[in-house]
Length: 515
Image 1: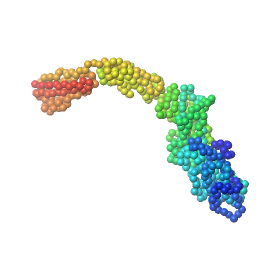
Image 2: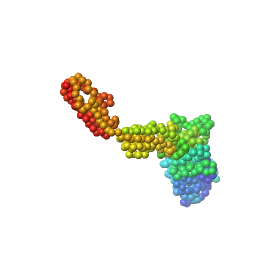
Image 3: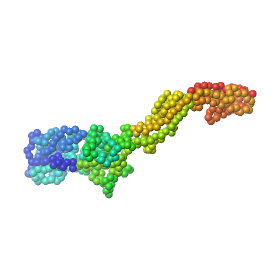
Image 4: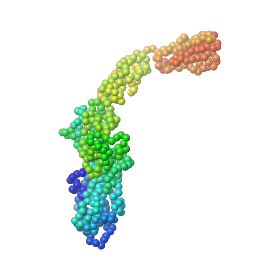
């Protein structure tokens, strides 16, 4: 139970014989009989607090609905009491048949008056939370006495919270010395929206869960990151409505194997705890904006997935070794990166012979699963060469410099390539020349040689097509686009045009005369 002390104090609604308090509302009496009656008083012996929702006051009662049914299920009386500020003086009375048999139902902290007329309705009523941490008026509770004989000596209604309390600690004693992880949030996932006060609550529809349940984050998790002499942290508490899913792993005797199958439909109906942590070790780290995620199930034994009302679960999270492996919970490591250990580049040195020349450098990192490490590139002298974010080096001027690649994961891994730029003279030359004389039927090759070799180059197709239509020659262009072959057919003259772009920006005209 949530507290053995509370079972004696908090979980009791006392029905005693006493005088009516003038300040209290009377119980609405629906049926009377011409028999000996006993006046029964209802009082609450509960402390009240103004604690806010993030730390729910488990002792608080702000309002209560009470219903009394006779042995035939007929409603004898009901009341709704609000504005409870203290225990003293709160007494509600009703006349009942002495030695009669009654069933009494109580619902506390629902926040509204229940419209109930028969015993089946109260047994099947369902309570909905507006928010998973909406406890500003107190935690929802219920209590019942079934088929109880009224003797005039008073009755006791044991109230139960409709929620479970989950207490979490973290034990870091089994982690490797280099491992650090800081919990940023802890949350109930699969957190029910509703509960049946007077019957077992079993969520069967995934839509009856809050998208995100009871949550503690930021400063609220600081106590989980504070360890004491035994390397065990302080404690936080989470709360959720009952969700009784039962034994889903029958025969499971190993408490380190409480993991539901990936493809099972049961997984989406079970409530679990999710912890998000920033992680750091000598070999791994949590990437920016991402976390190491643990997900685990409460429950009473390795095969059971019940989260029972009015029950306290004490859970100690004990990650071992690197903290990245374990069979007792599901671990999401998609936000964890691997530190680079060594790095080599596809070039240790580069030589460029003209401004604008480009080459791509490829990095090779070990271990292999560090390939997704973000890289940072830089040049020691950008007037000689620049480098892009994907390792493309471009010559910008004569001289020497180094291009350096760094692993941006904080590991300190880097590698560099020395770069030399020697600017050669630019030129554009036509072979066999700018004036060509030949005879009909000859085959002539006209070639352009230029530097730098990756300078844009263009052959004037418009001029070639014009001379072809005139019937002077047919032509063909080589695969590299630098050579034109002319197949002369008739006497006459024609023009060829060849042009280079930046950095040459030069053009040549070639006159062809066919005799």
